[in-house]
Amino acid sequence: MDKTLADLIKISNITGRNPALTQAAGGNTSVKTSDGKFMFIKASGTALKDMNAKRGWRKLRLNKVLGVIKDKCLAKMSTARREQEILSRHLISCCDGIASTARPSVEANLHALLDKCVIHLHPLVVGAYVNSKKGHVEITKLFKSEKYPPLWIPYAPPGFPLAIKTSRLVADYEKRYGKKPAIMFLAKHGIFVTAQNAPDAMRLLHNVLNRCENNLPRLKTLCLKPPAAKKILEVKSAIQKAVLNATGHRLPVTFIYNNEIALFINRPDAAKLLAMGPLEPAEMVYVNGTPMWVETPSPAKIASGMKKMVRQGNKPVSAFLVKGVGLFIAADKKDAPIVKDFATGTTLVRLWASHFGGLVPLTKTEQNFVKRWYLAAPQPTKHRR
Image (cartoon, rainbow, N blue to C red; front, side, top):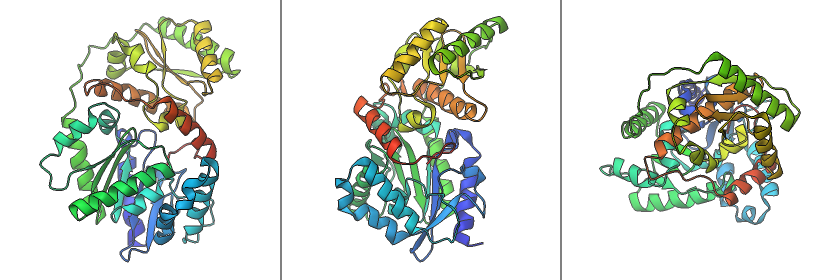
């Protein structure tokens, strides 16, 4: 096997096995060849942990990918036309002989800008910073002694706009420090780490994540006493009836209860924290937004809330946080684990981020762009990016 591909598979499998790093199999990786002409990158539709020698990656001509960012004509196109054009160019850039329509990661342009080995993830401990008001300040403090500090990327819409903004900021960083950034924190998104080889990239990733985690507030450990089985069944039935009423689908409902969920549902500001809306595009694209807060499990009230979401142009929610009870997921067997990962993840991030000046959710304008972008760019149904 090509060593570059072997490195890509190794870092992908290692990081992909840790759900706290990927959140529902999200994230992507890439490794460039030593001659700088090609880039092996994760393909959308395959989880990092499932990548192997035969599937889950594509090989691209690097100059073709970089050419996408440099093409000023793309910025003048509509979102739909531009995303389709970029998708086509990425597929044309592939030179791996793979008889598949699997497309390279939607963030291939970002990877092309950086060092040889790139790891992009959505760790929960990073979410506490990139989704909070004082996140940038906290990151600056954490890395103030570093000769080459992390690059903070203010929020930009996914796809081409994010690639253009990152390209400019990376160029500015390189002018200032004489090298490309090894660490990038992307507001309302995640983290990129990059190095000259796979072992160095992995070491850097773990060092950064440990530093971020050690700075987080310690959550109180509760003496958990799960709700009575009768209460759980009562709420399950109410949610199932509400979902059937609002969507016409009878879906299985599962119950999740742990320390973080117990802490959240018993906070006096829990409803307010959820009402702020989705924190990042992935919450909208993959699990239909933020979990619904339920004060009292009335089928009629829950259904009414879901129908209101649809009238506002959103998809009906799949997760429900019920006051004093716990988290409930209404989804089929295939989608339930993904919804669970996002729902539990966003709950934990909101607990942490509230200690860093409060949350910075997506604005209505940003949410509307994500909706248009999702419709314009074909998305994998199961695994992200």
